[in-house]
Amino acid sequence: MNVDVNLTPDSIVFWQWGFVKLNATIVFTWAVMLILVIVSILITRNLSTGQRISRWQNMLETIVSAIRKQIADMTQQKPDQYIAFLGTLFLFISVSNLLAVVPYFESPAGSLSTTAALAACVFFAVPIFGILKQGLPGYLKQYIEPSPLMLPFNIIGEFSRTLALAVRLFGNVMSGSLIIGVLLALAPLFVPVILQVLELLIGQIQAYIFAALATIYIASATRARQQKEEKIRQRGES
Figure 1 (tube, rainbow, N blue to C red):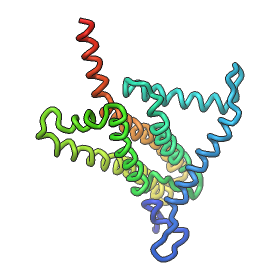
Figure 2: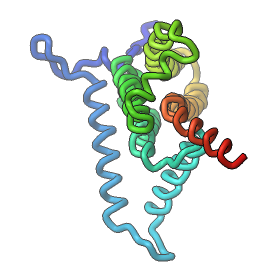
Figure 3: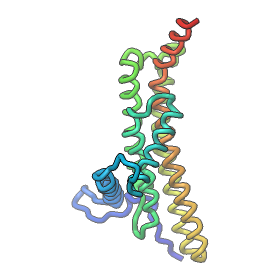
Figure 4: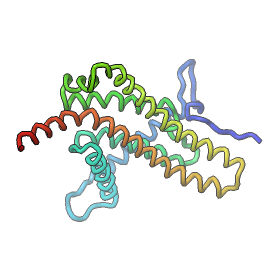
């Protein structure tokens, strides 16, 4: 029995000219971004500050409030400066995985190139937020703490956790799609349907985990100065 299963959206090529390829990863990534932009414009163009608001605005406020609360709880800081970046990460992965129920749609999160790009964004965002919060000397100082001998290990840790972010998300999304594809050929209809519902749930969990880890990495780069200020304040009070 032949099972036609695409391991990643990269293997689905819609158009090619020489070495230039237009594959499913690119197409569906832009589709998700377009959906997010259009929905955002439609919901926010008629925002109301009164007691009566639309259901769409209510849904948007619920999502934003939940993201703000999670960021505040994890970072112990005001979430305003982080919500645009972290919220976009979460919504992009979440919507990508939700749209997996649409026929012929392949989640961009199932491509290693996409997950690597998202992880790279986190990799560069961590020092940017850290430097903005602590200043360049303060941020670089943490690489030699508690001892200068830790410098190479701390640098390796930065790269390894970026790789782990990319591979974890790619592996979980790709493996779920692969299992569903195989069961569609081997099992009765209701079994893949149940598993696809579970895959949607797991996709949302993976979106949360990715965003949560990114939040933790950023928090670790920005909390040092705040902890130092708190210690100085406590000494002053005592």
